[in-house]
Length: 420
Ligand SMILES: [Zn+2]
Image (cartoon, rainbow, N blue to C red; front, side):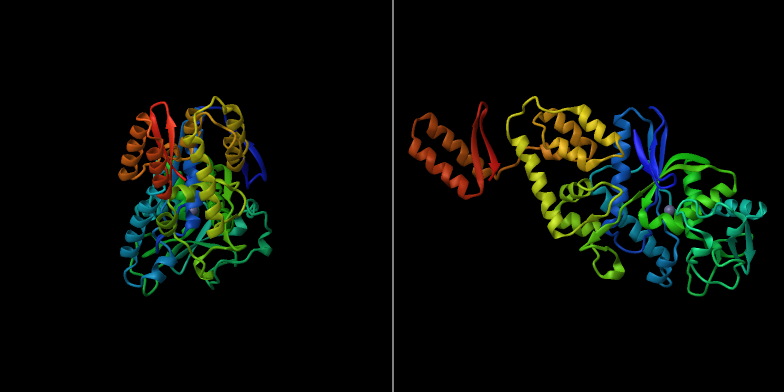
């Protein structure tokens, strides 16, 4: 199986099964109901884990919760811990409702502070980081390869935040001294404070998997500075860290990146409530994971139509048409889900289709449609009328059922009701 890696800018072959394949996908910063954009890396990680297991791999997925961050302090001055706890709960509920199961580990930054402090101490001892005014910064000039992931030259990089305490503008904070208004703080050798965002993920990933693992994932907007810095921190301690870096394309709305600041926000909760989880998942599957994906009413409507096409196959008799090897080849080639869906559109074998949709948490497509009980009763009366050769009455009952939006089909076992 091959996957594209941002680090090498090429397709990378996975080791043969059983691996292991250990995956760390960056999770949300919890300060509001999660944006639908957060559903893409979540679903990608869960689908990839399911596929790898299907292929005989020992696959594990760890997905972190960033519950210490400037955004949380800004969103709830004086009550950031309460907001983070509430928003973590929302995220777990909303992603559970996608029906894909849950990752093997969901570490929180707040549970990892002791490890984070230990990691920063090692960086300071190794001369790769320095304390200044209660903050600790990573020294970018000690890393000649810095910029290896985002392929930027240090002098062209946009510094994250200006500070007179930094030796070089591109240095980034590993530890931040407590500022007025911040209601959470932890003890450290440098005084009270809290970790920077990037070091949280280096430590949570290594706490889960050790100093080297197979896949690191996250949105394309995390390549720089977040992942560049995670990689620099871990390499600085001689740890290889992730071998393959997967960055999913962003969700767009009308060609623009969806974000809170642009005012075109959609939450996972809102989309699942309004459209159902199957439509949301079908839309995510319809795009290659590396490419941007238009997520709006029109594309949701197309996904709904696509689901209906698949449902119709399950409403028709099963035929032995389907080629598992072709499906496998599409997913093994950089996890090409749109290609896999195109292949599934040609299948008529219900058992095979059910097995394929199970990889994507969509086996519910195969569930028979449930008609309202009064229509089931009418269809039963129609069947009796037919048996009694009262075809006028049978036709009248069929018209009544059709007027209610359902079609009655005669099958060996009696009848079947399907939506029109
Ligand atoms: Zn991260």
